Amino acid sequence: MSKRHYLIDAGHGGIVKGEYTTAPKKMFKFDDGFTVYEGVFNRDVATHLVELLKKDCIDHTLVVTENEDIPLKERVERINNIVKDQPNKYVLISIHGNAGGGRGDEIWTSVGETESDRLVEKFSIGYRNVMDGYNRPFRTDTSDGDIDKESNFYILRKTLCPAFLTENGFFDNRQDAEFMVSKEGAMAFAMAHYKGIKKIEDYTSAF
Image (tube, rainbow, N blue to C red; front, side, top):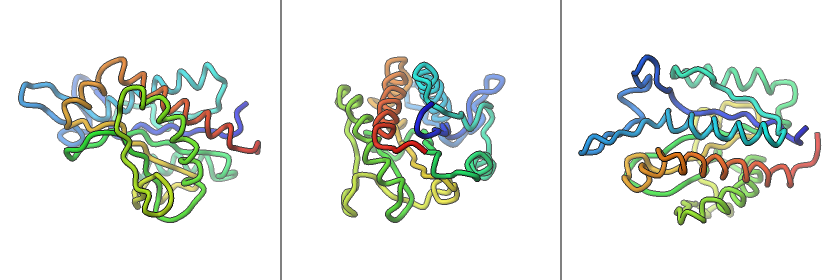
């Protein structure tokens, strides 16, 4: 049994009957037709991560098992129903890909100093130990004294437990996109999350 229970959330939808359920959002088609579907990438990383957690007997729950694009409000309700009796035992990790013309990886928490910030400080060590091996840029905001970026994302603001959101590559950047959709890339991001979780486990007192 692990010290905390990890809720793994893969953002956005997958493929149902050959169609991307979040289209036309959260996808990018390059001029040569190469197309990346963020929700499919998120699910690939989450699936590999769950396999790693199972092998290591780390307590976890996959928040969304469907390929449909489950509304954000419903995902938050699922999370809060799980954690309501002992919220600090749980940690939510919401897995995403980024867009907007940049490159690299980010970790986001809600605005203000919370337990999530302290967990990300530990998580980021394991995460970066893996991704630095792939020469991945790690995008930070240290203006408030820590490395995570902050935003009032609904899933971070409305969940009852400590929570953070990872942005793993930019799917509209060709270099990032090709890595993201490769088997090596998906496995690398999953391993980065797993190693980050192990760092949280090292930090956390048993509940």
